[in-house]
Image 1 (cartoon, rainbow, N blue to C red):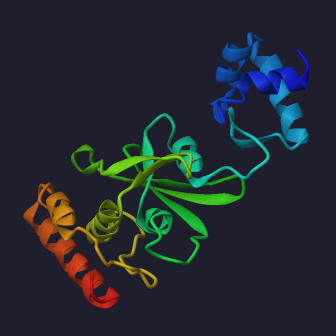
Image 2: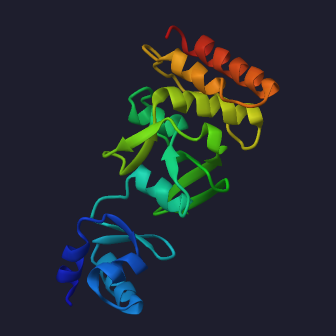
Length: 205
C-alpha cells in the first residue's frame, strides 16, 4: 500500500493511534507505524505522543490535544481556553487548559503546552462537542466555575485571575447550580468568594 492510499483510508480520522491505523488499513502495527512516519516526513501527519498521531497539514486543534493528553480518560477544554473559544476573552492562550477525570499533569504535544486539571466525577460535565476545536469544550459558565473551583481547592497552580473578560449575558444561575453540587460547605464558600471577585473585577455581567 502506497502512502497516498494509506492516507486516504485514514482521512476521516484526524486523530488516531498507531494500533487504530493498523486495524483500519489492515497492516501490521510496525508497518502502520512506518507508514505514519512517512506521512509525517511529508507534512501529512504530526506525532503527538507515543503511538498517537494527528493527520493533516494544519496544526492539531486544542480539543484534539486535550483528548490525546488525557487518554485513556475523557477531557474537555475549560478555563481560559474555553472562554477564548466562546469569544469571552480576546487574548490567545499560550497554553491550553483542560479538565479530566484522570491525573492532573502538564505535557507538551506538537510544541503546545496542555495543562490537565482533575475534577471529581460529580463536577465533571457542562461541556459539548465543538467542531472548531476537534474536541469537547466547557460552556462559558462551566469554564468560570472550573477556574473558581480549582483555585479554591488549591490542588493545582490555577488562579481565578483572568485577563479582560466579557461576562455579559453569562447565566449565573447555571454557575450557581454547579456550586450547589460541591460536597463540602467550606469549599462551596471559598468558590463563591472567588466567583464574587471575578464578577467584581470583570465589571457588569
